[in-house]
Image (cartoon, rainbow, N blue to C red; front, side, top):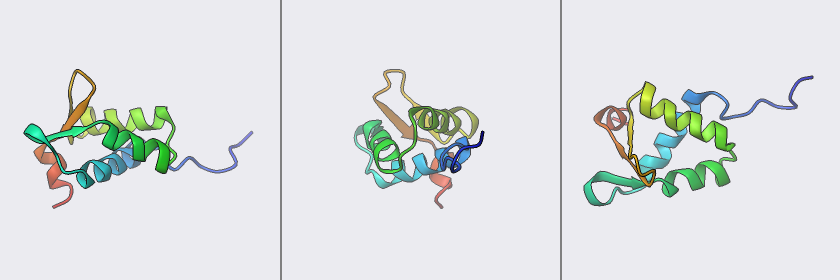
Length: 88
């Protein structure tokens, strides 16, 4: 059995790049913080990513590419220099 269509965000790298686009669109507040809801709302509701696709993309951006720093509280991220260089 095959899926009717490929999932757009099934590739963690594509999801991570889209997450970075959402992060860039938000003006960081206090100490470079980007509130997590400013990333997860558009990714889940507008882009129609599944929670698993979103989480895989977020982890890829944080752990593999080092584009984001995810705060232990889970309430915000910060864009690293590598993440800023992505859009240079």
